[in-house]
Length: 451
Image (cartoon, rainbow, N blue to C red; front, side):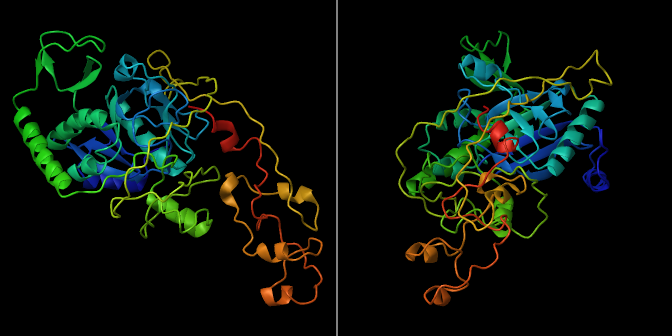
């Protein structure tokens, strides 16, 4: 129930958006951005704010089965009962997967969220600061009378260039289908009406029949006031797509081995502050100079690729052969109270994200240090990849003498043995190849195998 910040209230006033007006959320995986749109005084939706996504998991493409670590794509509806103020991950709302389309196509999974804590296993994870603001915007819209708000989750911004770059991806038929909903929103700035029939999405469809997700679609048509403008946009995009393909626009490998992504601003912060990625793993370009919300202690950065991932600004190599998706076991789920459970218990009921059970971590062998091994446990709660290896471990490996701390410089190491210096604090580094000891209550151990 924290109020909107003065900065957000000022932004709403600048954009002529009443605090209680309806909202709509759009998500773009490849760009790792979440947009909040809000109705202004004209009655149309306008962009309020774009949030960099701190972490999403899986690859580009829809979620298909429980355990595939995929963050969902498609159109989802958020009700007040899906808002969870008691989340294990600061605040959250349940995306609502599987929806009618997912169920009709036999897709499985549960408890897919937008939440804080900057760590994801099938969810869209924001920072706590961002999630608090997004949650408050949804709360104010519900208090203003909005019954539910729509989430549109896309693999990337649905431009002709991006469609051409990803034209060889097996998910392209699905993406062409949801692009129609994207096109309707972009030309009308109104929330598209979503139905499912014949195991397909249909948008702003009018029919005298009945839409059943599993039965063939009845005859339907788009309203006359929007059909021409939507058709014109689609024809323009198709012409541009064909021209890009004819010019030989390179395609993007559809399986790079990267487990999800992180907005370039957060990745740049990790590189600068913690040096978790080397220069030969260019997941994203470095970010610009702007405010980056604090990520907290549970940051779970994307797994590095076997080969460098290519972005739109770099010509990609030929498509890589398809690989099987990584499937992990899932944990049982619980529930929690709704956002307004204490205020209006007879109206709204919550679905929460479940607290996964703790899981023990294997304890790696302690690195050889002059000081007791017990000191290796005294480190802050971080992701296992948070500590870099010593800069010159090779010096000690070349010597045939008993293990001792590396000398101050290579020239000194080649001379007569020097007395071992005082051991540095254990939080400074670990031996090359070793993994730090992680508390069994860390975020990664609790959540790594869910979804």
